[in-house]
Length: 287
Image 1: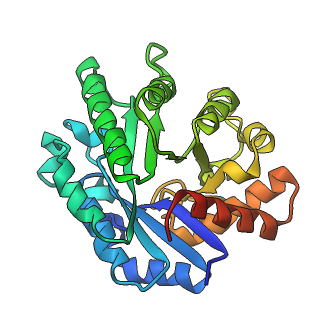
Image 2: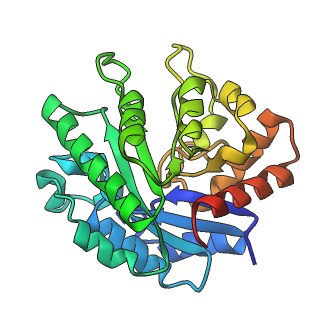
């Protein structure tokens, strides 16, 4: 039986949930919310699959290498815990065969999160990120698994545009679609991704008041303009909890607030929006 809601991108596989992981997933499933945990490197990818295998249905995994882990990376305690682990300082080389082994399990339904992150980066880092992203696009083509794409800009650096670069690399290399999670760009870019066959996913940030400095994404405009049949929802837990949970640790259950906000923006019944998003997720992923 299909769920009412789905969180297509969360990280209950992260250290932040070590003390309450089972409770968080049970809360989601008990409230008819299905969960896709997303890997950021080989260890968290393995953890995502380990968690998925503990449930008969409703919990899945996506495996891959996040752009910030292609080199020496910013230490995020929510992800790897206090003190970090070896990979946080050395970066990871994308080993296709290690990820291919994980893909043998039917609970693994995509590749990622992969893409480009220009928030903390150097010219050398950009080149490495692009190389690893292309490798994962080609891996997606080879395995016919959809891509889970991460894109982040540093808005103080106008010389680099991660969204433009991701679009260009997808045009050049991608033969399989996927989803751009945590979308925070322009309506024009949303339409470009959709033209390439990629869904656009929104997080709890859409429930926040618009930024006064004009740097923020005009979510209301974008959500009104693009077709509901190309929209997905993700919490990116444990980050960016939606209103009314803002400031707390996010979790998959809260994806309902994102669906509610999309319904409000589109002036549609929440049940209709929720149903469409489940149908969209089934068009992208096999479950």
